[in-house]
Length: 121
Length: 121
DNA sequence: TAAACATATGCGCACACATTCATACGATAT
DNA sequence: ATATCGTATGAATGTGTGCGCATATGTTTA
Image (cartoon, rainbow over all chains, first blue to last red; front, side, top):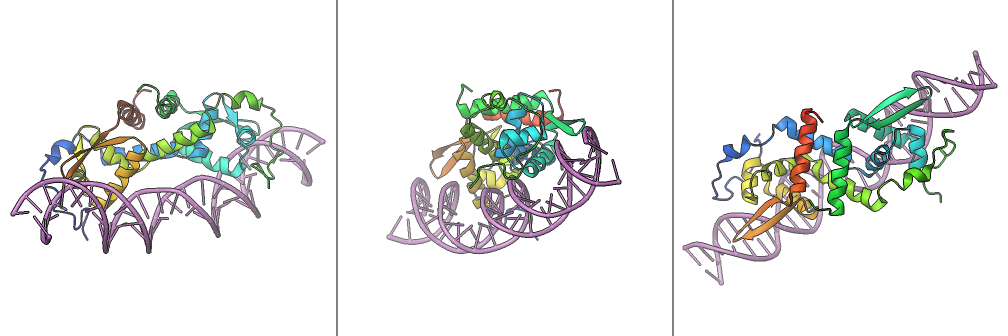
């Protein structure tokens, strides 16, 4: 019926040049992708997986062993990470080895750590 | 009863030196905080808010106007952002102005954008 | 070919969480 | 004082999603 602000139309006299702000913002699609991208990092199991792959390429069963998690759970999360192009996989016999997809990922993880550790920003 | 891997114990012969990997990983607390931190970025409404504050300090009613969102929704999200120390607020009369908390945040947003835009990493 | 292993996947459930509505709180103006 | 504006908050609701179970697929070994 209506799109967006319903009964909250007459808010705040402050007349900002909305357009001036809007064309500085990323495209809607980009912001959606950005949110989706960060969302993948925003989960403990996945962060743990990434923290391991940060140092070493490993196969699924090794992740299972190290994290002491259900194999299914890990596979599910690896699937998410793969879909987001955050990790890549390599087949070798029965095993499938996973590693971080690129240095961007490594850098982001590191930046995040620095932030929560309160290092000088 | 049992902690962790249930019936999936006998997985993979591959004997990795688990300890060697474990002490390279961040502390459990840190990984949890890291996940929580990224989670805050992993939501469209919050990304939109941050994309605006990226350029300019604004009060709530201005955000409401620009994003055409429910005022309550925005307040709820600002609360989350505040709790995560991603934005800070400043009171001025009836209005409360929000802005990015530090340059770390700005940098992270930018890095994310670069990544999804596929810029050379 | 059969059996054992490594990984992936569909389903179901439980829980987390974003949004809305209603309302409360604080500040300003009349 | 009271009305109005700007913002915050609690409850209810709907949606999304992480995990476990069972099972399927693919690979190696016997």
